[in-house]
Length: 83
Image: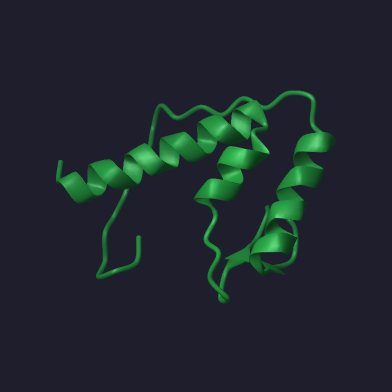
């Protein structure tokens, strides 16, 4: 496995562990702060901008008592600069 793929998988795991813990501060540190940042939660419309996205995660965490995510099968493909 390349260092680049390992870095992506490590970041992915950190994100989902923070998600399980409902850790808004860690999620916020992982989220992009760029002007083109978009998040689409399953079954929802696109949310644009860091603050709106952060608020959406905060709302999810406040309304969810328990989250468990299985990361047993994870793959990554690298294509140019987009992963």
